[in-house]
Amino acid sequence: MSGAVVIGAQWGDEGKGKIVDLLAERFEIVARYQGGNNAGHTVVHGDETFKFHLLPSGILEPDKICILGNGVVIDPEVLVGELDALEARGRSTAGLRISMNAHVIMPWHRLLDQQSEVSLGSLQIGTTRRGIGPAYADKASRVGIRVQDLFDLGILQKKVAAALAIRNREILRGRDQGPLYPNKVVEELAPFAARLQPYAADTSLLIDQALKAGKRVLFEGAQGTLLDLDNGTYPFVTSSNPIAGGACTGTGVGPTKIDSVLGIAKAYLTRVGAGPFPSEADEERGAKIRDIGAEFGTTTGRERRCGWLDLVGLRYAVRLNGLTELVLTKLDVLSEFASIPVCVAYRLPDGTITEEFPAHQSDFHHAEPVWEERPGWNADISDATEWDQLPQAARDYVEWVADQLGIPVTLVGVGVRRDQVLAPHGMEAVARSAR
Ligand code: GDP
Ligand code: IMO
Ligand code: MG
Image 1 (tube, rainbow, N blue to C red):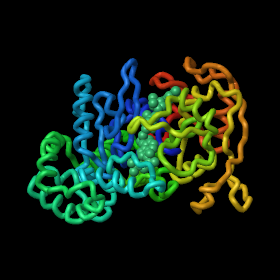
Image 2: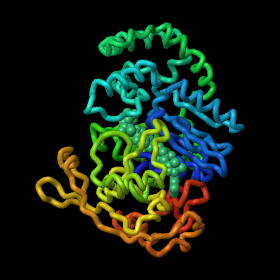
Image 3: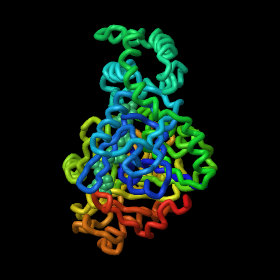
Image 4: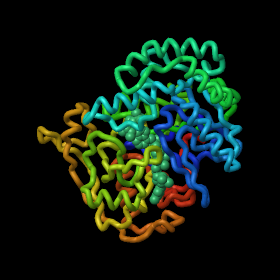
């Protein structure tokens, strides 16, 4: 066994992309297993900044196989755009492999995502409007278009017509939009299909063969645990399974092949889109975190809502993902706070205090945070190159979190760059079980 999973332990944007980029050199394959271009990962390499939406964050590492697994939903135009942009910057994309079973985001998915948000009005989810939910809905309804369908335009035309026979009815209800025509949809898709064909592969088999040959595979999750369709803060969630279990269904490997699960969490908390957020900061301090942490969405540019670390949510992430270790990013962002509130429990409407994530949505919606103030360190830590160089209070914060969760913190982020990551237990302790 030598599979490790990287997951978001909060509501996304924890810095997964940066950590996958950093760890990729130690794995032969990086495989993304769910989500689509709702994801946005910023990866800083020297003085170059890359933003990925669909490509696995290991793509910058030379000579790696980077997989888009069957659980990913792919917008062909967006993917081709990313490939072209990367190649224009002199980077190779030859290592990319796309699962033939991955589903395709079609033009009607984008339309329906927008229409559904508009019709929900004040109840809207705040989706990225990239067509993610409708694409997964078509997959579950068994009228979805898969990557393998793109390579025979005759088959594609038939499947598009079958799907549109259903979805055009919904589109027309939106009034400001006429129906979509199958031949036009296929005609527009054809050039992207041709461009992607060389990358298509049986990726489940590829991963199995690699694992059998003793190679290491890093499974990359997008979004985060609390956005998980089954276990997150429903209905304010995405439409896939970002939790570690999704790595199996989303790439076609069995759970016995995975031995490390790394949860990525910020040293505080953010959320994009609507939904409850018990540890959300007051306006002034929220704006300060947003300012220092540059908390604006990579995909939509929206302001991220900012708050404090929520140990109830993180404990839940430890449980749902079977986390073996935690990576705490953006510790540097807290340097300017004299004292740092952390939500250690919830007070429920009936007065109960709980450390466990509420099973009932109404309890969560009305949960009040129980705070514990942790001392700040009032010093710039972004230049630290060794764990020991951090002020005692900063080390205490990290160790206290590890203690509360019962798992080690193996990496700590102190800045955007690749080298601004500290390993409290040494690099050899990171994803240890996957070697
Ligand atoms: P992802 O979606 O989980 O990959 O995360 P995003 O890329 O959307 O958001 C994380 C942001 O934080 C990016 O802009 C990163 O460059 C940045 N970042 C990552 N780690 C650190 C860190 O340790 N300190 C600081 N200041 N920024 C970080
Ligand atoms: P990464 O991979 C943060 C949020 C949206 C919305 C909800 C549903 O960068 O961490 P969707 O378009 O998926 O149907 O929107 O999920 N969301 C994210 N929030 N980071 C992400 O990805 C997200 N992907 C989706 O804001 O609230
Ligand atoms: Mg992101």
